[in-house]
Length: 188
Image 1: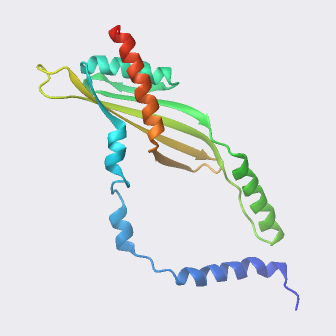
Image 2 (image 1 turned 90 degrees about the vertical axis):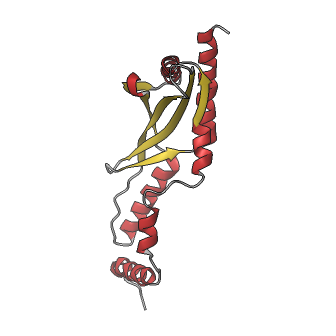
Image 3 (image 1 turned 135 degrees about the vertical axis):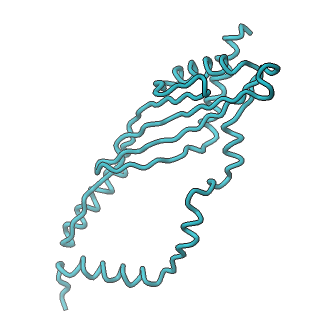
């Protein structure tokens, strides 16, 4: 018996539906997970936060300089609220992903199906800084700074995804640069 290529896609779809029926899906667990804190939220917050012996105004000025030194363009600022947002755009194209999508398209065409290839094209990295005075504003010159990094990845099909960057290295790099900037500003 010879297998006809026109039956490949319908057979694959039928097999997928049969396998999908075997998976138990818990709608309540999914609903409860929405909006919940990411795993290791405490560790992430610790990596994102530092307290400095300086006024909030000085911390905001030095944070602005640090973001610019790291290649970010300021897109939003609100000194009264202690908020800074900076972005930078980078290429997100990966050769392996493009090759895989092209191969999948060719394979799908050979089996009589269709596949629209899509891959990551660019990413916008966004740094958000929030400062908060610690203790009584008149009596304290300490300021807490929290920085978070996200990336928005755009694809060739027009879709995008947002990811919180949790790697400790990116936060360490920011705070190392920030400390250097603060040291220069304070003349030490």
